[in-house]
Amino acid sequence: GSEPFVRELSNYLMQFGIKYYCATTTDEAKQILNTHEDIKLLLVDEEIQGNEQGILLIEDIRKNYSSTQLVIIAMSLHGYNSPHSIAFLKKGANDFITKPFIKEQFSLRIMQNLETLNMIEEKHKLASTDFLTKLNNRLSLSEIAPSLLKKAKEADTKLAAAMIDIAHFKQVNDNHGH
Image (cartoon, rainbow, N blue to C red):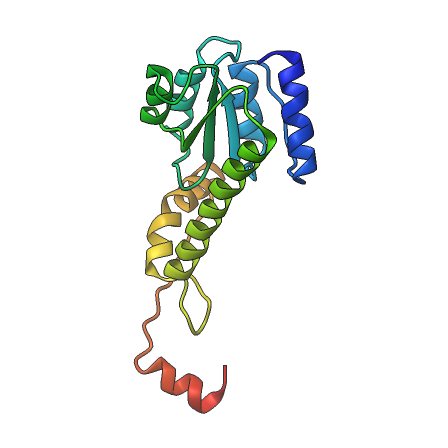
């Protein structure tokens, strides 16, 4: 987007207490995203410069980040009923906002999307850990095993895993404490 628009976005994000990085090209955006694993929100302007358009940037990013890992809000001068908004959503944007927008609308869209992402993360954590021990369960092992194996191979190191099924574990916990 234009420099005044980027300044306005930066001011809004600072006012909301959101740490942000600014990229002016698609390559910079990818580099920042790959460097900072803690990023949860990506704002993509249709007018971003680079080797690909904003729509293609979203499609490319979705190959590595699901909509439950990273919120993408697309922005365009074209309205909600335009082919642009539909294309952004089809390629993986979580939401779409038409420029120019008012601060309150921008704030609501960001906060609602981040709240949804946080709820999903909470539910996933509950589903992947044992209620009593708070240890990772079989579901989480099946999710993290591929990356653990890859890291072990890259480091040329061995990897061991143990899965223990203790019958009547609740009784053991009740009798001997948590």
